[in-house]
Length: 320
Ligand code: NAP
Image (cartoon, rainbow, N blue to C red; front, side, top):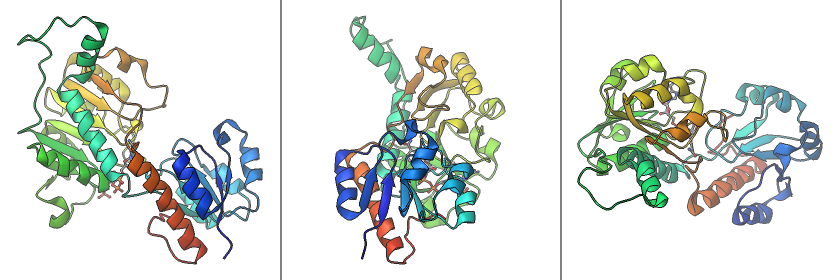
């Protein structure tokens, strides 16, 4: 059988590129984001699929311009907010992503963010690295513990449940806000709040793990932050635009939100510069799924998906 022919419109870790090259007929275009769209479209002529990153928008204009040979778009991410799924559906183009294999890495990052925010990691690191540290005192950099607190998870899906599992081990009680309540075997005792404001008022820390959609864009705005307990913590491993930056920055400045741990930002990598001046903001450069294990597994998931499509089967990681 002729191997699936894929244009890889991004640079991937070497091991992943090797895996792709050994399983597929690949053409690598690592600078695709810097090239005109017309060039990308021309390179796709005769190819079965386009592989791209979450940073590369596949909007309706691009999807409509794709050559007739293109049967699939695969994203090296689980998030799909950069792809116009309706446009893909309309053209009969399959969309593949990388669910499950990055869940552990991202859930671990969420715990890193929670701990970094609760224990004042930014200020602590600055103190040591600046050389200004004068030694241990009982008054320096007093944070709060996670143990005994209630964690609210916005988006109790694969990653949300991974965060819940780890947070339970830290002695936290879990509640969540999804559009639908989970069956008991998945909820594992976590309490569902159908109402967002009631949910936010019940928690000590919020972990955002929902997809970015029109319904979740700007979810955490000034009104909802006001509904949170004074001194609550906010963590975001989902997508930046789920948070209204003006509202969160004002709450971090006033202390109504004690601290935030953020892996994702609106307009990455040009995040709102006001975050950089906030000692109570613990910031990471979108490293949620960035582990040796998940990077390799994400590539393999896409390879398996292409193999299924080539064999006329429906891959598990197909969303459209
Ligand atoms: P998932 O399994 O599909 O879970 C998403 C959850 O969000 C579901 O439980 C869903 O429940 C809930 N949800 C959807 N719309 C909602 C709404 N309007 N209000 C409240 N809850 C809503 O996805 P996942 O694999 O956990 O991934 C979640 C997101 O994490 C991805 O979409 C991606 O953007 C982000 N992510 C970030 C990184 C990173 O590097 N930082 C890495 C991977 C993923 P209902 O359908 O019941 O509402």
